[in-house]
Length: 214
Ligand code: B16
Ligand code: MG
View 1: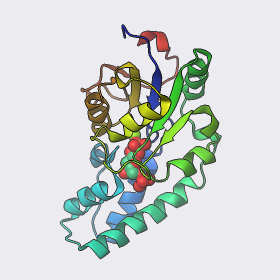
View 2: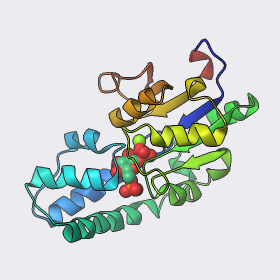
View 3: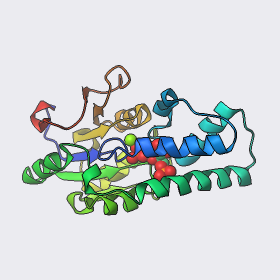
View 4: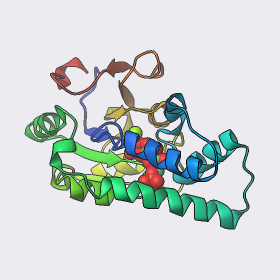
């Protein structure tokens, strides 16, 4: 980037920790309880989107119509399965290189934030003992509009006191990259370059990654 970077904004699920696999397993359990199965390939579309939007995608696969009371019950049921998985998480599940990057950001005197669609983000950050490494946390409890809306990223930049055009976002989801781009931020995709085509730069993970590459 040719401008001075004022803030680094991290998605949580799939970037800091691999909770995407737990979300998928929990959705699969819900689908199985409703009499159908979910293929692994379907997981990509569930990443980064809100709980209720993900539920609607899952129900459409099973061809299941539900009223608002049933939808809420299904979402609660999936979240119950998900909470079982994440309650067993520990610091070992922080993805490789993440802590080193956060320490580098601190040494540079820059701000760091979480911008996650998840309402469970505070619980996960506490479980893995990493909350204090972030200056700001914005999650699905505060952002009203789900990714790909840019709201969660703009709230994070605002809390950091950073100009959105001088922020870098790390995201594993197509919907998240679209939201970050709409916020006017530099987008680093974390994952597969064939999937994350909307990113300015794609890295497989943070292992061996240097902020000098941005
Ligand atoms: P919850 P992120 C997102 O988190 C997940 O990627 C997405 O799969 C999930 O549906 C969403 O959070 C809501 O999560 O049910 O825990 O509120 O990737 O934006 O950190
Ligand atoms: Mg994610």
